[in-house]
Length: 224
Length: 211
Ligand SMILES: [Zn+2]
Image (cartoon, rainbow over all chains, first blue to last red):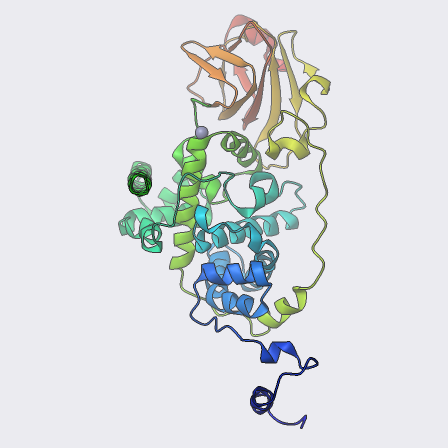
């Protein structure tokens, strides 16, 4: 019997009455996570400590987390290690994710950012850590006035709202943290152009933020 | 509530995790008590999330998930508890050896005292300045950038009044003579990349000792 493939033994178990001694993981309803949203996966990790939800989250997000670390200048093996630290934090801190104050991808961003920073600092033996700057990985200490129940679409549109030339400067700020003067050298563009592209991007973001806020007000009004 | 805030460029770089340690801690102190900047930070983090989302996926090492699953049941590292000093912003707690009144202030003059904080940073020095109530500093300019965050009390400078929480940027073009309000000493956190350069006569005399 022991040599039967797993699929067969599972069938066998389902066909007989569950006994108290039967391994519960094989008999209880197994949730299929393959089409779950990131938000639901994090909730399952937090509430049920479900390792399968964790594996699914890993599948869906770690390749982008690795790409992020590498864009920030990490080599392949460092990037792998940063992703390990990041996912370990996701497992431990899943309960700090508050769907009402932001999207899952934003939460993951704050974690990979902090792990990337701390990885670099550890190698330089510095005492300052990301915990000093950001409380509980949430990136912001607010009991947020900005609600994101609106829709995922809305949140995704931030980057899409920027023309490519502005996007390019924003990417440079996030990945390389160079002063504007160096960005201008890299892109072979005048400093003024860099500054104005960044300013235009900021203005666009501010407009979008206000739109989100006014939608929130409309929704609040409708609820009364 | 603060009236003077870090620029959007600084806030974006902070959200991106790209500021030098000293400046990052200073921004964190301001943001802790500033709902406006918290809202902006939220926005910039969201943009960071969008950027993460937009990246071309890179496959991980085959063994990565197995290695990770083995580590999930490891005990979590114990976080050392720091005794919180009341009235000090959270980001500075680990770097303040004592409350303002019990720090070993170094006298530069009777009206201005300083205390250097031990914060690793390649570029910037971090200091607390204490301007005695009602006293005015000699006029000075700056060789580089100086970022100031009012921690306690208030000071005025020509036309502006700065209160606790306000974030002030002085650069090489700023020539100023800050004066503390009469009712209490003013304590400021300062992050600077070059020594002060004094301009007045009194300033020239003091300059060699004032760094
Ligand atoms: Zn502010």
